[in-house]
Length: 311
Image (cartoon, rainbow, N blue to C red; front, side):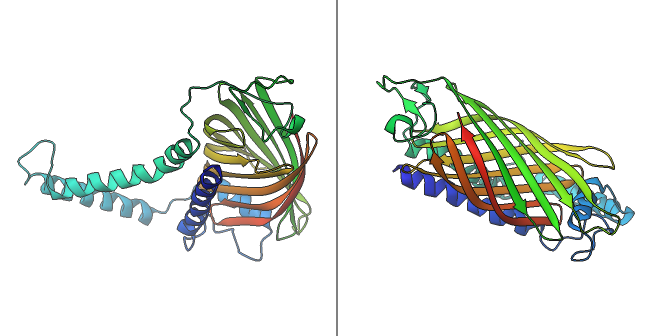
C-alpha cells in the first residue's frame, strides 16, 4: 500500500512534469532578444524574466475576445428563465469544474487515503533517517525509547551542468516540525562563460511555507506556497510559487525524492522539477538525479549530483 502511494504520487508528478512544459511549447519567445541556440543560456533566462512586452494587436485581440465571450454568455443565459442560469451550458460548466477540481484534489486525497493518515496521531523524528535501525525517517505513535526530536532538517548542495556553457550551483534547506508545518527554500547561482561580453552571473531562488499533508514512517508528502525571485545586473524580479514534493525511504540506505515548483517569475511562467535517488551514510546523503528548469521559453536541464545532511 505504501509503495502504491509512492507510485501514484510520483506518477502524478510525472504527468504534471510533462503537461506543463508541453503546454508552453510552440509559443512565441517572450523577448525578441532570445535567439535559440545562438545566445548564451543566461541571456535566455534574463530575457524571459524581464520581458513585459505586449503588442497593441494582442491587447485588442484579447479585449475583443473578452467582449464576444461576455456577450455570448449573456444571450445564452437570457434564455434560461432561471437565476442563476442552470441550462445545458451551465451543466457542462459545472461538470468541467468538478473534473478540474477533482484532478487537482487527487494528489492530496489519494496519498492520505493510501497511507491511512487521519491526521490524528503524534509524530516525532529520529536524529536522521534509518538511525538506530529504524525503518524510515518518522516515528508515529511509537514506543521507541531512543533519542527523538520534534523537528527535522535537510540541507543540500548540488551542481547542475547545462548547455550553452552555462553552469548552475544550488542549495536547498528544508525544516519541518511535528505539527507538519515546514519551511522550504532554495537558491541557485547561474554562471555563463560563453558570452562574448565576458562571464555573466545571476541568482534565482524560492521561499515557501509548506504543510505535510500525508505521512507515514517511510513516506512524507508536502505542498506549499511562496515566492520566486531573481537577482542579476538588470533588476530584481519576483513571482508566486506552488511547490509539491515527496520523500520516500523504501529501505536502508536508499532515499527517493521528487519536487515540483510551478509559478511565475517577472512576466514569465516558471516550472521546475528535480528528482533524485540518494544513499544515506549516517546523517550524510549522497544523491544523483535529473533537474529540469523552464522559465518562459528558456529551458535548462541536465543531470544533478550533490551532497546533503539530514538532521
